[in-house]
Image 1 (cartoon, rainbow, N blue to C red):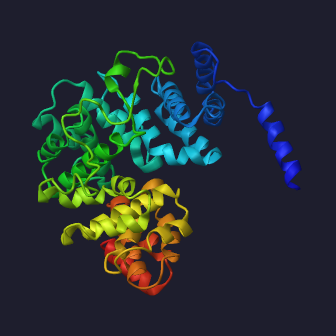
Image 2: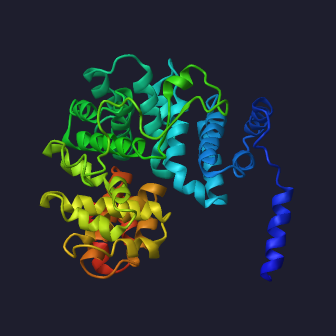
Image 3: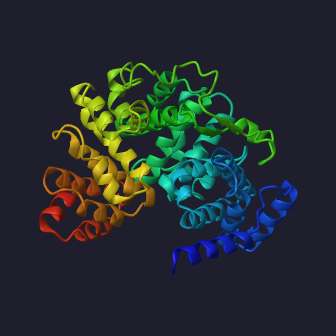
Length: 419
């Protein structure tokens, strides 16, 4: 079709799409309730698009948050997640914001008096499982004083040790987010709260959540829904009362340092160093002007034992920033020291699988990675993710690695999958 005709058709379609941005909240709420009563997730996605798509970038993100708070209200979490997935398929911009939006849905899901384990299980793995993390944030910030017993027992209630490793990770990672938020983004205090957990694996997973919350909440455009505002029944889309934008003004800990690209990793206790660098990519890229080559140079300044973790964080961000565009991700990971570069591909493939909870996406990515050590580590990382996804199911782990087909790749994936 000629370009002019295509543009005319797009304009005609746009003219036929209702613009609900100025519709009164109660009228829009009635539309949402009607679609929700029918179980119409695609209809809800279209309503979100019609409500928000005409707005400027910042207002559009807030509008999505408000709309999905509204959709998820009244115990409609699975429907809200379905609508968000549908909207992501219609609008690629939503994919980039998806993890934050799933946090918002999770935060709205739990209310005082609810069984937290039951609510937690209404979530799913959409957009790196942010719904699970949001439930933990809501619980920790609304249930009185956080103490060691309550923190240590929470994930034993939700996903007991030795059962579902993937679900337990979502819980203990969510604890890191929740402790940060409960203690007003006091990172050292949140890390000390993670130290209450019973195992090294639990603690490291919790540290990662705390560092991730610090990085996201301190970004200039960081959005974090105020749980206490939601509890006070701040109406979605009403003056955006339930939202904060950018770094919390009264945080007791300096969340970023413009003079030190490696901060806060450069100042935390060494036992937190690995988890800090694994989650440091966003801050590092902000300090490097979004230049992956400069960011890799900064990773080379990190203490030697943490350089691999730093490169891994760049891979996570390469995948996220490109919305899992394999060619661009491979290009972003092709900078810096040859010794540590393979870890960038490890971070990327783990993010691919985290986003969809589907190891097939990781297998497809690794096929595009340059042969040699980078590809070998990529295959192994697929296996490591398979362990988390299918910890109690050897047959599914076997099947996931078998899809690689190349014998050397299958073998190293099986090593990672503990087969």
